[in-house]
Length: 421
Image (tube, rainbow, N blue to C red; front, side, top):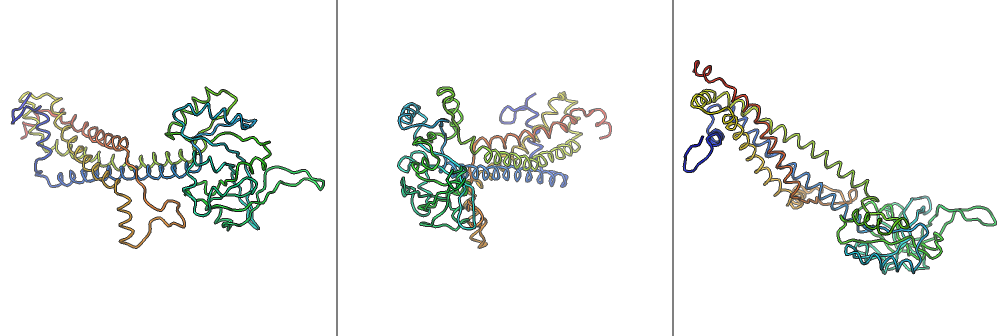
């Protein structure tokens, strides 16, 4: 059934739109409608902002962490000599995903100064090649990675470690290995003295857990016989690491062990992802409550329009057309709230850093204390996929909320209603 009003439109959609924008005789219905619209708008906007901020923190932590660790590592249990390293480099360099490789030696040790001890991951690197796989040199706060020289037994440590142990450039420290040295006087732990030549600060866990020494010193320290553990590899796209790892595992066979950053740092990013899902679920409850306020709106509208529905039914309107009227009304309210909320949420998320900086300046308070937090600004990353699922889910909830009262409207008996009107 169609109505000509300047253009052809389905009658049920036309009536539903008229009901949506009509001035309410019942002020309470108008209040509930406005409350539902504001709740839906606020819920969608807040959800987009919070998810974008969490995306920003995740990206910030990932970028900082991967500035000191490789995207992939390729190791061999028996170690690799110079010739094997060159052959492996030649083989892997044919992969278009690879943009840098560097040899390394890994190990565990206890870092100590008088009265203080700290367990660390020791990574032996070649400063001349390390820049190809990590951006550590950009995060040096004092000294330089290039100051590492074979035979000097020098070390570059993280800022957290330096603060904890009270170390600065030129200070000495002891490195105790989890190995025993056999001497004529008995069994003793292997200990070596090192000199601090650099301090880095990437603002991530590696600041407290990892130190870097020259690869030649690491080979001597861990008695590798001049061999290295393997290669540190940097890819064009860090998100390709799991796929490249699987491809190389099939290609290189069981002789090599290949790991990627999603495995070594998987626990951290899985925790962030879980926190984001839980936060999204909690905030989605706000949207659900606002969306289901539409039930109240449509129920009251059905009660208000009983006589009009009865007249339409006697004129031949089908039950499904009556359902469509009130689904249209609920959908339009939801669409308006979701659209406004999405626009506000995206605008705030894109400018959240500036907004927070302005509030900090206005109230002379710093949100993130630099002595406590490693990230002292509010990062934000708006992803189209997140905006789409938030908007789509909110709109779907609005439509679902209108289904029950719309179905009840279609079951109104026209004769009974008109008898008492």
